[in-house]
Length: 160
Image (cartoon, rainbow, N blue to C red):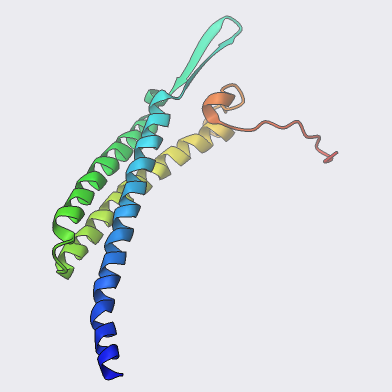
């Protein structure tokens, strides 16, 4: 019985390490796919409308905040790919905790970059949706529905 317990305790760390590395690889692949999909959607999203003879268009490149979000997603996707290569080449052969701490700091920096881009884009998206009456900025999402991806519903004020 003692022999079974010693064999089980020796195999458990190896199994746990394989699960950990497998989860790391899977999550990095998800991050790479999501960041490049987000970048693709931002770069290809545009809409042109005609209001009273004036042609207006909306593109991501008109807003520095949307550019920052797009470029941040490109950087995160590229560096996540590099960290995936690092994990596959170095992490599988070594169980040194220093490597995982470096990956943790790397992921923390990339997350901060993406959160900064998302925060900037959210502010501009909110401004486009609601406008700002104090500064005279009008809302544009009521004109650019496809670009803003809003669902417009016709509801009365009394709820019927």
